[in-house]
Image (cartoon, rainbow, N blue to C red):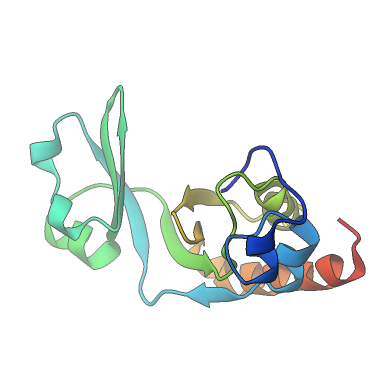
Length: 152
């Protein structure tokens, strides 16, 4: 997620642009759930993976990692071991915002929910165990009260 140096009180915060104030981000936090189940697959050569089906990808020293819909991985015989629900945080956090990742991670960790984070330009995305999806959403929505109370 968007971690880095914060600049409090910018005009873009007031006008609905990217947010840097943690209390504001948490108070307005919405969570969208993407349909389907998602898996991480990896290959030493990118030609081994269907990049056109990737919802996210990361190039690592060991090879390419892609996040695919489970049915796409199954149809191609690609191995995986973690089946996830995809949650998108509907708060436009600035890339330099501080604390959102920590707050989200804490809320999920307190409940023993694994979380893999992907940062996009406009939103942050969380891949959590598919069988804990609803619990994760409730935990994240609980953060709104912390933001409104300034208890972050």
